[in-house]
Amino acid sequence: MDYMKYLPIFINLKFKKVLVFGGGMIAYRKIKLLLQCHANIHIISKKLCKKLFLYMYNKKVIWISMNYFKKYLKNVCLVVIATNNNNYNNRIYKLINNNKILINTVDNEKLCSFIFPSIVNRDPILIAVSSKGKSPVLTRIIREKIEILIPYNFGNIALLSGKFRKIIKFYSSNLSERRFFWESVFDSSFINEILHNNFKNAIQILYSYMINNVKRDGEVVLVGAGPGDSELLTIKGLQTLQRADIVLYDYLISRNILQLIRKDAKLLCVGKRFGLNSITQNEINELLIKFAKQGYRVVRLKGGDSFIFGRGVEELIAVKKAGIKFKIIPGITSAVGISASIGVPLTYRKYSSSVLFLTANLYKNSNINNSIIYSKNAETLVFYMCKTKIQDILKSVLSKGFFLNTPIVLVGFGTLLYQKVLFGQLKEIVFLSKKLSNPILLIIGKVVNLHKKLSWLN
Ligand code: SAH
Image (tube, rainbow, N blue to C red):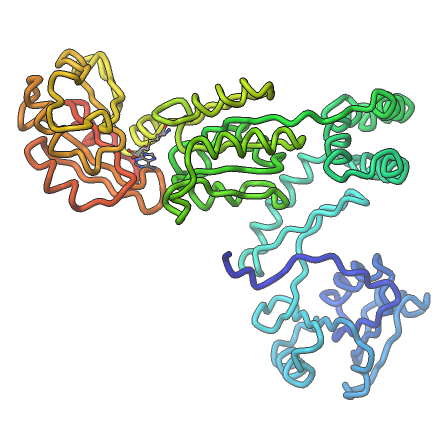
């Protein structure tokens, strides 16, 4: 996992002692926030601004108008250093930093062991945004976007649900069943009714789900993850990943996509590259069926589109035979993702009116020329799984009338940050292919030349 530096947690500061250095407006802004949490605030400062003076007068804070003494640190939970004097802030930080106490120095990330996030408050829903102190303006912009996205009374949904949580627990002791219950409720018009303040209707909906005892049937969802770039995942695919109980994924799935999966979901790599050589197609089918029968939402996550050169079909046939519900969510196949990424359209009126997606795995032996299906009328060829079959492909396409100077492109790890793109001509194919490691996609045809006009990535 990536290093996080800060763990976002929500701290209960009620009655806890918080020491704040500074009596001006900078300190005031932090104190105002801390007071909302009912913290027991002690201010150390020679002077107090008007607003803080009022707090002191109303006994909301304690003011210590003296120099700092070590004894003030006793039982302190948090320290906020918030004066407008950097040298003073530095000095105080050095004096009190013992790596045990949590300290925030306003506007100085180096002198912080915790930072204040930007907050969207829809009590009891709290959303905190942070850029590790790198760009407060950016976090503010993100916060504003979230503010717009989440209606001001959104918290009522959590409040009302919270009231029913115990009853629902009483009805069902099974955690996964309860989660399914709530997901079904939130999928209904329950949320909408609350947002329109129709609480009676909302409660009615809850009861109807309880009475009808919504039970969860397991299911398998085949999701195409796209070629690698996580932003090329479909919205439906993303939503499915965020609801999954178990995800069986292939080795082609990029880390960025795996990070989008619901954090509590169980992840199983069934790809050959992760030392699980022994797992057979039958075993994968059996796992899918077993988990779905246990009532789980099982996602089978495959690279690109599951129906293009994948075993998704076999898996679904087995799942269906076992009487299990399934869904199919398409993905962007690597040919299409890569075509966009490198600015090579797969068809173009002047050069090519058709495109063939081929798997080089068809070449079971070297005597392949007759079994191959394309003809030179299909002017763009895209080869999947081609790394070990380059010689065979070369022989085959030459025999079908392609010229040695036909433009080609080989792309490794397409659409990912470390995508490698090698342009050339058919005669250079063997040499070029040796420079790349799997996964590789090969495009052959005049359209390849269009990258000179359409390439857009730097
Ligand atoms: N269902 C997938 C293809 C699976 S076959 C899809 O629709 O894309 C695996 C082959 O796909 C690889 O050998 C390679 O040829 C191609 N491939 C998949 N992802 C790729 C990527 N990011 N870059 C280059 N080739 C890729």
